[in-house]
Length: 343
Ligand SMILES: [Zn+2]
Image (cartoon, rainbow, N blue to C red):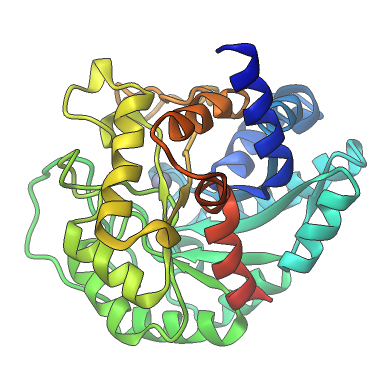
């Protein structure tokens, strides 16, 4: 990157409140701490966040299939515990935030803000009361479902699987959405199936997000949103986060590059303007599943760490996006929705 571009990107990053709306940090922290590592955030992540100018990370609590159903709650609580231990061991680097006011204060103190989310309501099973507990523990975003079925909804699979007919939200799922909105939690629709997406759009009173989903028109997987869904999300006032995992970016997965990811930004902007697109890179290159029970999907991150965010930003500049537009994409849009819902 040419020096003047590097400087312009750095200046823009400093001015912007940069938000990555989806990063499975609590999961990776848990897996590593259970192998004896300590200060994982300090040693593996904080420098990348800083180099990329990231101000707020939404850290998703993710539960592997092999823990469900019985160990789902336990694994979620473990991940929250580990996060607290990490923040205590490495003071002054990252701060658990419950509101955007707290996130702003963290930034002003030179710390990276962390907001917790659940990637799938599986830890609750069918107990609505537990949502309150997670709220009290600081969880402020609720992904209703991961790519599997739970008590609330059906997930969108990464590829076709043999299954029976799917449904939308269950009666419990409807209550969960209503309760989450009452509490001030952001509903996240990444991973939900099309039927569930439509159901949430009908009942949501607040803007919702699809924290890490791209455009199905450009990469045909059920994990991505159709043009109509993007319109619906915009009508709702919501935001979708661009996902950097190659299989969600381009049909030619092996050669997917930043330009392909930028095509998704262009596509969303073409449908509904600049106000409904952000980043939720879903970076997982660095993660290792120590149990290795899942056959890992042949995936890689196009933006391979937060450190490489400048490649994305400079790409937006090259495509003629104004500084104001880039600031909105890098976090301004998610900031608006989070502020509105969480306070
Ligand atoms: Zn995900």
